[in-house]
Image (cartoon, rainbow, N blue to C red; front, side, top):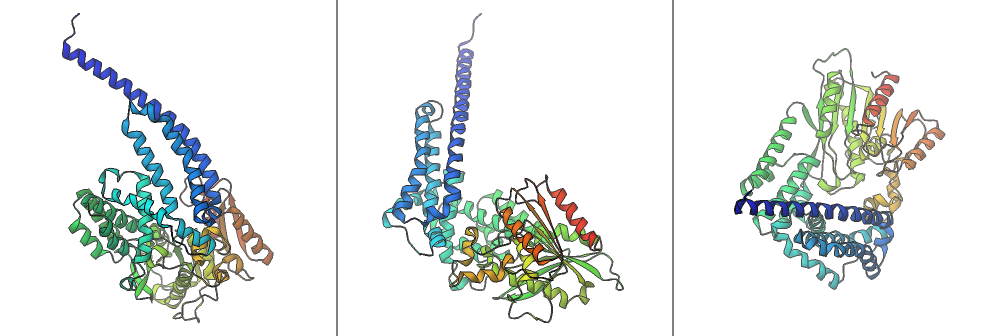
Length: 501
C-alpha cells in the first residue's frame, strides 16, 4: 500500500509530537512530585520559625534563606537536561519563579525584622541592588501570569504604598491604601498592558474585600484609561452589582471620624408591628481587622428581616482601607451598638434583645462590645450601653497580647501592654451576657487552645455560656460545607434557648 508523502510526513510529525507530549507530561509529573516533597520540608522549616528567622541580623538571615532556596535550585538543575528536549522554557521559568519567591522573603525583611525585634533596619546596598534587578521585569507583560512574580510585585508595592499613604493628601480619604497603590503604579509601570493589569488587580481586590463605597471617581477614571476591554467589563459589572445591593435597604451614618462617615446598614421587616418590638441581629465581618465588607452580611440580614428581625451590618475601620488598627475597630463596634440603642424607636428595635455575631476578627469585636469598657470613642454618649444582650462567636480571636501573629497591632505602641485593653481574655469578668463560642480543633489561624483557655476562664467566673468544639474543623467554619450546617444548628438552638426563635 502506498502512502502519500504528505500523509507520511503528517503521521511522523503527529507521532513525534505525541511522544514529546507524553515525555513532557511524565517529566512534569515526576518534577512536581519531587518539588512537592521539597515544598513540604520547606514549609516545616520556615513557617513555624518565621519570627526567629526574621529576627536574625541581615547576613545570618540571608545565609538562612539561601540554605532554604538551594534545594529547590538543585532540583531544577537535576531536571534541566531532560526538559531541554521537550520544553526549553520550563526550567527557565521555574528558576525565575523560585528566585522571585525567595526574593520576596528578603524584600520583606525590614518590615518583619522590626515586627519581631522592634528594631528598624534597611536592606544593605548590595542586597537592595540585587533586588533592583527585578524592576526591569515590571514592564514585561509576558510574565504577568507568574504567581511568584505577582507575589513579589505585591510585596514591593505594599512597602512603597506604606510610605506613600502617610502623605497629607490621604489624611481624610476612606480608601487610603487603594488610592496610594493607584498613585504609585504609574511610577513603576509604563507598559500599558502591565499598568492596566495592576490597576485592575487592586481595584478588583478592593471591591471584593472592602466594597465599593466612594469608588465612583476611581472606577470612572479606570474605565476611561484602561485599554483591556475584559478588565473594564469586569470592573464595571462588579461596581454596578455592588451599587445595586446598597439600594434595597437603609444606610445611616452612625459615626463621623477622621473626616469620613461610617455606615450602618439596616434591613427592616416587611411589616412593622408598633405594639411588638423587633429583636436585632448585628453582623461584624471578619478579615483580620485588615479587610471586611458590610455586603458579606447582607444575605444574613435579609434572612433575619424576613423572620421579623431587624438585620444590621456594620462598617468599621480597617487596616488596609483606613490605615487603622483593631483599637479603632473596637471603638466603632461599641459606637454602633450605642447608636442602635439611641435610635431604637425609629426602627422599632427591642433594646433588650440585641444579638451580635461575628466570625474571626468579627468575633473579637463581638466580644469587645461587652468587654472593652475602657475603650470608647470620645464622641460616644456613654449613657447608652455598648453591651449587647446575646453574643455569637465563630472562630473568634481571644487574645491580642503576646501573640506573634498580631505583632503588627502593637508595633507602634510605646507600651505593648495596651493591647490588653482590647484583648478579650484579659478583660473577663462576672455578669457577662450569654455567649455562644464555636471553634474548630484544626484552626490554623486562631489556635484552638486559646478558645479552650477563654472558655475555662468563663467557667471559673460563672458566666452563662456554651463552648462547642468542632472536631477537625478549620478556621472558616461558617462556610465550610462540612461544618457550616452544624454551626447553623448550634446558633439556632442557642437563640431558641433564650427565646429568640
